[in-house]
Length: 564
Image 1 (tube, rainbow, N blue to C red):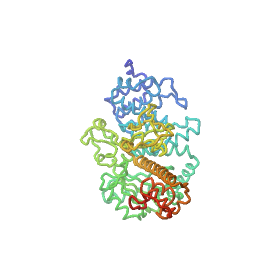
Image 2 (cartoon, one colour):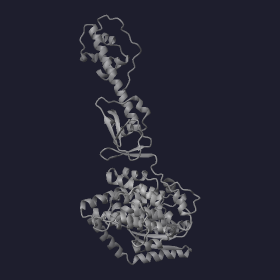
Image 3 (cartoon, one colour):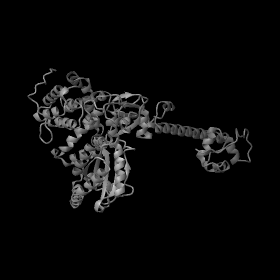
């Protein structure tokens, strides 16, 4: 493949200007090369709205550049669909753009294939699969930006049912993913847009009510801001304050969770207060509680105990000026930047500046293997690997359902995870359409079909080749049940033979005397005890026909009733 994608005449002036302004100077030539390469490969392709398909990768790249991500991520965004939509291979990408970018493009391509193949199957596990299938968090950021642009342009899809399906999938998979990564900006936009598609009537109703509330409080908002500023100024605390309008989706969600109407929500009005230092957060909180009445149960300290995604802020509910219920969020500038961009906030620190507090966050320890001494964003990126769900594997049934298993699980575990009866009848497995042993270890994304037989049954040796509790308990239960059946059959055979030797015909009804004598539950339990050797068949005859004389009538050992 010839390297002829460096001519600048094909470049979109606006995009080039944006990239220059974002200070991607060192990688500008490679970005231009990726731009032209992608545009050439997408030539003649169009989106559902009839626009040139290349408008999509440009938009995804711009979303990520606005988040401050590195040049490799921007290039990946430009190239993220070329392998899926053209004859280009990952080897071609590696040759033209290097190993790092080829790995990123490969990661996005694999996730796209999984997405297209399995759709909305088991949303929570599907979202985990997306994460566990990615070694580099930038792959997930490209996928989120890709979904964001698709949702922004969803009106281009004329089929309403398809719109709703895509939006439902987004709310169930990509919104929680954005939340987990702490990217609240993307999360909120996805929620609002999808809500308007799925339930526009309800959204409009909430919006009208919000507009009314905000119009009535138009005078109060600047008054509240001024009062808070004065309180902070008197104690020499620098603050920046903005009034924040709650989104319709967040209001609706809270109404559903609390099962209340809008009038009963105490935090329709919200104010974000930004301070310089962490200690100022607590000082200002104390001052606000001294000047206004705090609403019980509304205080949350996410600074000393951050949310799992790393979000930090102090939240409190107050009865503000003119008895208005308000929510106040207090945080530092760094916390605020993180609240909007989550994991992507790390890439916003240029010129070798370390993210001062980020490496201390719990979410960082969970998500990323961070080299603490990395003193430049590029060095940081080289070691940024994802650790979430690395103790799990996600496999698929032939119908596309996702089965979540521990790492090192085998096809035996898979079979019992689907259904215990399937496991009991298993005789083999097809993994990715290839026949494999049931003891084969499974990997992320494997499609597994369990082969069964009406004569199949668990092998006791399976206990050493499975790791899930369900599989082990099911196998043990089957083995115990099989043993009991064998004891019952043996007991029946022994008793019939005893009756035959004494010229008697076995009548199960007359065994009631023996059952009562040994305090057993029923005939089955009697037959099992005979099969185990706890009760001799000759004793049964003696109990029913005590007038006759028989030899060898004795108990091998004292009989003790056992529970089965």
